[in-house]
Length: 237
Image (cartoon, rainbow, N blue to C red; front, top):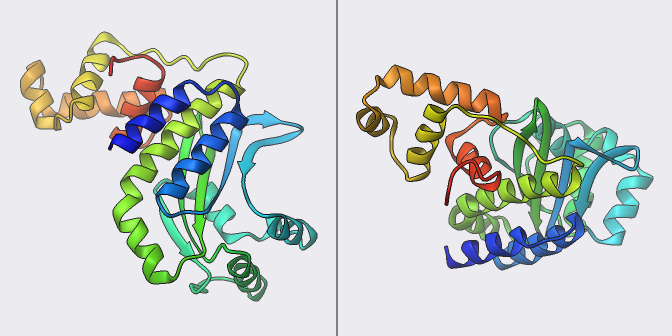
C-alpha cells in the first residue's frame, strides 16, 4: 500500500497526460508488467481518441502494417466489458485464424499475457487500460493474483487524472447531501447494512442512493465511485 499511496501522490502532481503515462509505466513495471496501452473514447485527440502506450517499435509497426486495430480481440472486448479481464496468446477460443495469428505475433513481441481494466468515465463512452507481460503463464498468473486489486485502483486513478488533464473543463458531478454522506461512509469501508444503521434509513434506500450515485458519476462499482469522488474532491480523503 505504501507504493500505491506514493503513486497516487505522484500522479496528483502530474502536469500533462504524457507525464502521467510515464509515471504509470514506471509503477506497473514494479508490479511485474512491462508495457501498457490506454484508450479513452470520451476524450478527442488529433482527430481520433486519446491514447497512450509504451509498446516497442517492432509491435507498433507490425500492428499498423497489418491493420490489426480492425480485428484486435483485446481492443474489441475492452470496448464492451465492464469488469477487468485477463487475456493471453494461448487462449484461442472464439478467435478467427487472423486474430490467433495477431496474438501469437504479440507474444513474440513481448505481449504474451495481459490484464485489461475497462472503465466508463464520461456518460457511456468507454475507456480501458491494458497491461502486458512476456513472463511465463505461471509467473503472469502469480503477478495477477498478488497485484490485480492494486492494478485496478491504479488504472481508475490514471483514467480520472488523464481525463482531468485532457479535457478543457473539469468534470462536474453534483451529488445530494445525503448521497455525499453515503459516499463518505462507503469510502470508510462501511457495508450497506452499516450505512443503513448509521444514517437511520432502510437498506433499500441505501441501494437506491448507490444506483443514483453510479448513474450520476458514470461508474459501475462502489470502488470506482469512491475513487471518482476522491479525485474530484467531492469527499475528503
